[in-house]
Image 1 (cartoon, rainbow, N blue to C red):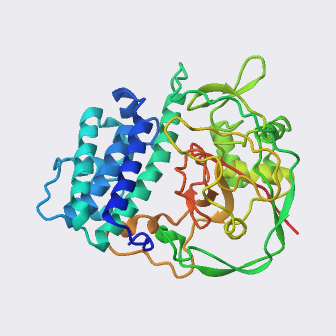
Image 2: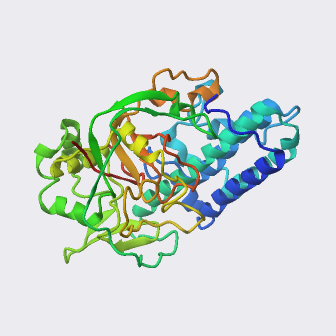
Image 3: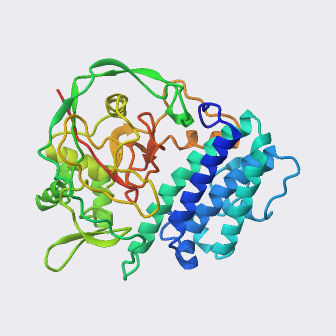
Length: 423
């Protein structure tokens, strides 16, 4: 099973959570036309319509088909369209061609979602522990796709010369800008990381195991846009000495000169494209949409480094993962600075934080058998761990042990960085 066992839930409580998660997905997609929801802007992104259908396919396949006697698929052809990467579930539309799925229409996909919702609610009272655990996994899976949906729509709209907005612009932040960067000494010596067995976690978050931390400190806050502009103006994207070899080749091959979605007007002023359209750069807000290569180069330019996964997780383990700037409802997506405070700030929310740690198995990890065992384990190669949460992460979805992961060149996700230093 691709998770740790959650606490027992009644049919009513699980049904209410199911309805809440599914409703948020619908609300996020509500502003989109059929055309908006069908187009695929790059191979790494998926159409919004595909996200809406795939999350429903997950519930239909692993709960209704496998655990409800007599259930008939909504459409026998749709599993081929909306399976993602589950080899155990057979052939499927290739990821790069998901944008070719002009039919079914958005309305037909909405009808599919309504059908699956009704069938799940009707079946819930008779489901035993195993399918209820799968339902909980499916809810966390859908929350991941809520963030992916927003990432992918932003990338799609950024290709449109009209620079359309998906949500209304939030009013400017009234809190004071972050002050000078301060250092917070981290735990030194033996510690433990990984899930502790309480509540839901994905399988890749365990087993819990011991680590040893050398003397170090973490920056009290995230790196800001203003600090990133200083990096640009100092020739950060033009000086190979700051970059890993692969990163420097990536910069050269792709002519990278700023974070994704940053644009410079003829008057020299920076602005960025976001879900609220094109807006002037907020110098105090955390920098966002950077790759691992960029994060590592910036850290090198400062003379510091990125935190390790263990350093970050141990530091965050005593903090409240429910706080910070995260997604609470459709239309409430913002990255804004955090005002003065003491200790570690912005650990959960605003942007995911690149670490210097590769996404590899924790000691003792074993992928489960069957299709759900494909959820995380087979991706543990060539990627880096990001920690925390972003402004598009549904509140409550992340925790200290959570392991987000992307390839080092990717930056359409809401990713930034926090610096670390050796002591």
